Image (cartoon, rainbow, N blue to C red; front, side, top):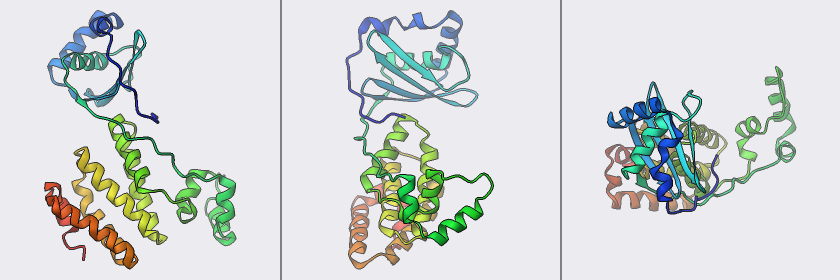
Length: 267
């Protein structure tokens, strides 16, 4: 959704002191109650953009950004208009209850046109794919890339890391993208692209550490994938993996016993 690093601006004091004008009295009362009850789970400042998670009947994402002399606000709750979740976040911002972070530089994905991808796929494989998907079949680039990932342009580590890191900071369907990474990892292993599979494993480890994500249940599966990558890689690339493992050991596995258990028997 957001493809850049937001510039930082000093808030206009009068603007941030007069945000009540955006809400009716009932919403203000409910927003204050939400704030006092600690329902603003976390708030992050990214330049002049604030992204927050607020507990309601479910967890809602609120975004607030200064736009000239106005405040642009959005919440993914069903309420039409400025809501109590937004007001609660404004109170948190007013009380400086937020973390300050920076987005990573945007890195474009190495894409491929549908027609060019089709040219790379062996005729028999493409024919089988068409037969298997005969019901409502059409050349959808996303579906084709998943099925024939071995013919898709290689993505580098920085693309994987920056993309996932930014999605979590922006609350931009991050866990859905995380699941896509796991699926891509499995497909890369199946087609023997062990180097790119390693980039995804490393990305998940690093992003989970840097943003303190709870992926405890995924460590056993990731550990298995890392062992496969190491076992199947060339001697030269094994040295790359070994260096990374030693860096983790040097930093005490980031003090994460699950990460330590995942990689301690890599050899």
